[in-house]
Image: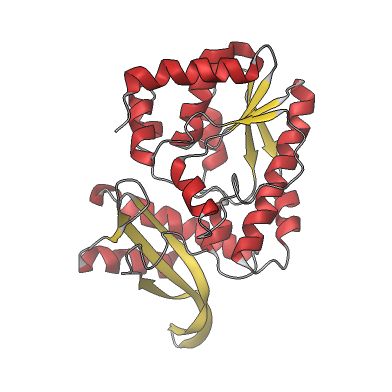
Length: 305
């Protein structure tokens, strides 16, 4: 486990050394990794840091409004509406690795534009150790590691928590006195809902995934999963009323883990699962059925793509 009393001053000093007298932007998602990185970077360079949140259209329900409220104290916070640009870039993209590459490049181009406006030469981001292991090991390219384009218009990318696991980042967040809503927040993939819809990314599938994920998080809050969500798998035949429907199949996934490197499917009670499926099919007319994923990691990964 990380020694937070040693890590925090060392990380601040390293950021100061890397960035020097220059300006930087921080890729802020609202998750614990980027929030810790932002806090450390702010301690290091103060007002020379500009936090940038990019609304990709691939985010959780209410994410942008939550970011605006949670980080209102950061006067320099920039919220960028890039929904159309990301969806256009992802049009007809099916391969999971290609999705991650497209999203990684789209993020960098947004940050490059914002960096020019802020006269910033450095990008700070919340890459953690499992991101690097899975990208470098060929398991899957994380958008902020293996998904990055080869040519990047920054003097450097600064990653203060790159050697930490998720549980260690949470320890640092607590030591920094970040609110529980940040330090204990459930992980969310950098590519967002794009990796929770199999096949092409469409607005319809994103809307179904977004609503279904919100239901799962709401219903499982008291079960305290490490991560829980819903994914859109494809279509299957169902019946609603007296009519045949060819609707979406939603997979519900809830896992227990320490650091995300391995995970066990959570054993949920039958009543909870029935309540989840009832809400998902009832609140989403185009959903035909709901299934529960009982696969551990390994052999599966936590996310679907």
